[in-house]
Image (tube, rainbow, N blue to C red; front, side):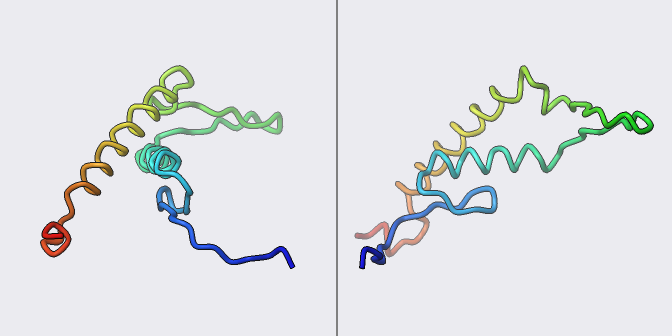
Length: 92
């Protein structure tokens, strides 16, 4: 039988589990941008709907904002992992 159980480190971000810190931070950045989203739709009377972008989801700016937030979340995560808040962990 080729099925085996393994343990792996997973990181949570954006409501899911990820295998890398970068993916978890990217998901968290995208989820953070969706919280304050003001995007809207226009209904064209049977001809479909048109998506109106808010300032956060502008197609030219959105990838840059996500990359910047991802970098900030990674730096924050590294700072937390290097400086544990538990004094017992810091004493080791």
